[in-house]
Image (tube, rainbow, N blue to C red; front, side, top):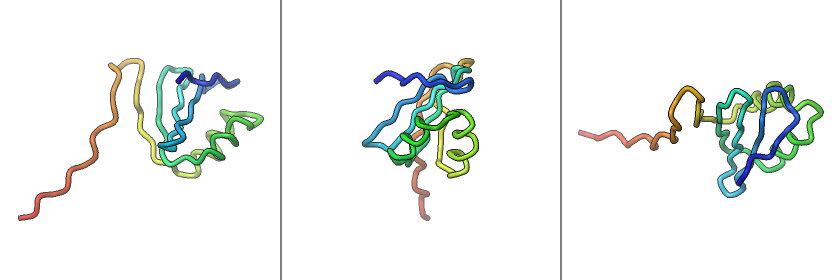
Length: 90
């Protein structure tokens, strides 16, 4: 699935994963972030915003979605870390 290009100085493109409810954002710096538990209507609202970058920074981020940095241009591509293990009870 390709990134949908957007008209923004900060965001190069986005794609939305319906089943996982993950918003995948590629920034103009090359960094890629995944935002979790994002409803489709939030993604559509973001695409319809007059200023995508401004809406993303003021409205979307204020909603407090969990996120993970997936790739930074200075790093090798990274994957999400595995979920934490249950502590061993003694």
